[in-house]
Image (cartoon, rainbow, N blue to C red; front, side, top):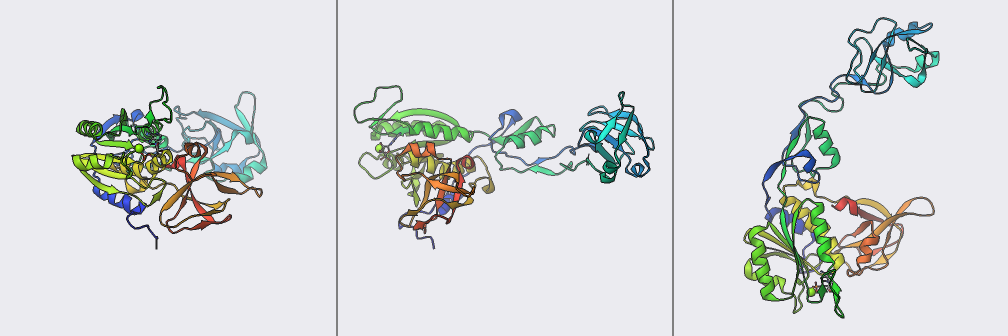
Amino acid sequence: MQNIKPGLTALSDALDIAFAEVPVMVPAQERPIQECYGSVLRQDVIARVSVPSVDNSAMDGYAMRHADLANVNGPIPVAGVSLAGRPFAGVLPEGAAIRIATGAAIPSGADCVIIQENVTANDDETEITIDPDVIARTSLHQNIRWTGEDIKAGDKILSAGGVLRPQDIAIVAGQGFSVLSVARPLKIAVFSTGDELARPGDILPPGGIYDSNRFAMIGMLRDIGCEVTDLGLLADDFEVLENALTDAAKNHDVIMTSGGVSVGKADLLKPVVDRLGEITAWKLAIKPGKPLMRGKIGNCLVIGLPGNPVSVLVSGLLYVVPVLRHAMGASRSALAPVRIPVCAGFDFKRRAGRREWLRARLVQNADGAFEAIAFSSTSSGMLSSMVWAEGLIELPESCTQVSKGDQVLYLPLSGLQ
Ligand code: AMP
Ligand code: MG
């Protein structure tokens, strides 16, 4: 039982509906791998080569035949050298060692590597001596990395729908691929509305506030690889908004706005979208961020976020980012935020009915254990709370109180982008 307030949609339902209704909006395109960081992968990647490509040494040291160690009674001749990229060509002679570098191929006949720190070499490195206790501790296959133990040729190493991280690009590069098929970035037009707003750089009229939301939206969208057109600041005026939306819908995949989606006199975005297209979703059971609108004008997706700065960031990260990633072809598994169970270091009371996120940090308590603390205010107007926060605490719809020591879910902000 979620105890959702009547007239509102639970976030999980709203996301399910959006994933079902919003199509994958952009085609795949081939791009050089160095331009693919953060993009949505649109192909499976199959390994072309095994890694390692040959059995090789995990350490700098001496390659030997393990069976020979039982017969050591004096210095051991060094019969050659195997370096990374320059392997020892012959077969390891009986009773001998081969000097070997990390990553170098294991010479034929050798089946263990003794690290150089455990060996004493003579001045010209033609002989080594090894202490009996080192010999006793050396096991068959010690310090050998086997062909294909990391990746086997033919294995699927990445799946379509993932968001590419540095390690993903690295593994692809390690397979010799120089291009990948990824989503063409969504083209998104962004603007803020509100007659009280001024542009940063302009003089602030009495009672005015600077437009900060546009800069939060642009950053969130760029972080997920969208191509943003900044349409600036628009007045709370039906015709101004109608013209801007009509034009932007012609050459953008998405329009994203802040402000003007509540039910006040100056909240004109909803009626304008209603006139030009249709409203497909409205009002989520979330706090902050309840008056959130999804609509469309032709094939252009329109997302109207409320004006409160914390609402923009929270609903942006928890609703808009997953929906837009989905529109670029991301799989469901790539869209779920990281939720970590942690101990609450605070008390909190509230009314049930909406899922709520408190601005949070993890701190060490007197016992050295980590616990989550919450910002002193839950106001959705306080942008300073988001600057202070390193994560969010998620309270389920049915929750009415949190007591110190309760388990709560912590969502690191870094895991939401
Ligand atoms: P609204 O959703 O338009 O009713 O706005 C709700 C609150 O957010 C009001 O206090 C606005 O002044 C504030 N607000 C609206 N848009 C912005 C913006 N772009 N930047 C900062 N604050 C805003
Ligand atoms: Mg407004």
